[in-house]
Length: 430
Image 1 (cartoon, one colour):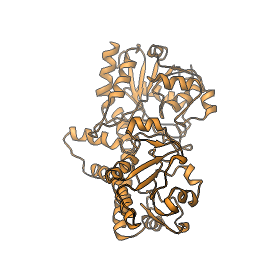
Image 2 (cartoon, one colour):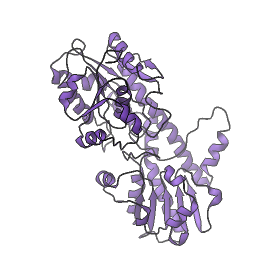
Image 3 (cartoon, helix red, strand yellow):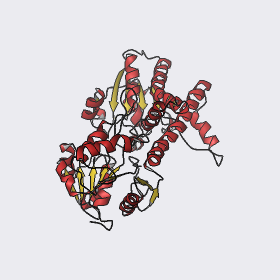
Image 4 (tube, rainbow, N blue to C red):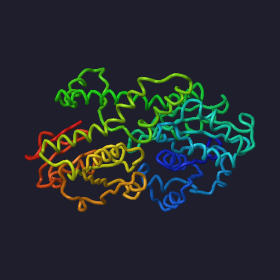
């Protein structure tokens, strides 16, 4: 055991849990639990599909990978890092969290501490999770076991702001437990910890971090809608405005993933239960959720301008993940563009070098081309996710995807060089 004297288990070895397990595993053996036996088998063989952990770091960590929950009995400090999505009605789906709580509860011992890292609404840890732990364990909260909350701040694909270099917010149900939780995280997080006033405060801090980003991006998206009608390039406007020292730099775009496009709904859900209907937050969410449809409609307009028949036309979409340079397809809003174009009768083909075609078919019921050779010549190319794979290429690559090297190009993130647009191609940028 480390200097904090705790044996650690990590429940959930995804984008959040695995980096946490690896860092703790560099100084002590940790129990790495995941319900997916396939994930466990891959990790045992050194296969890491999320690309969040370097192979050398994975190899150097002392982790007991297991899908046998009884192994959790070996630990006395349990970190739960499972997804907390929203359902089709945009309401919190706590089922993975409750399931993880049941699993941990069934193997909880006196003196154990359970720390939640999953994003939740304020009050969820104590009101939703603790009763499950008590029921499954037969133990009493605060006298037999304690809980804490330390929200994850993992930014997928970011190799600079990582688990160890981001200040860790910690909270607990008592001052004594808080000191233990802080000591555990301080043993690996070089950026240090911030001790929140309470578990609810820490939960609230997490949801507003991403709610703030969501609202700022929604403002940029609304400005993009306005400037598009004015025939002004949004990026030119932002470049000019950014010359002022206190202008906040945000860009328009699709807002998906498991954080920014989800977390605000946890806050608005709880607020609504308490009798307050959020207006600004939900308005921002509405704008961001509509951008995919707007991009699709602009693509249709560009096809018409290019004198292409909309019905039966071919549009190639480059990139499907929720952000560039990651394989994560959870809550990707590129699917909104795909479905809207299909509603117009367009033949949509998708190519993403980082994501898994089987996962996309299973999650979204669409087929993805495995490589460029399978793509038929398109009337329009839509660069949805600017993976470095695409950025390493030039305009000739885009030309090669178009029928007769001409047609419309839609550049969602404005990453293509507009000063080098080849003849015969029209470019539209969000």
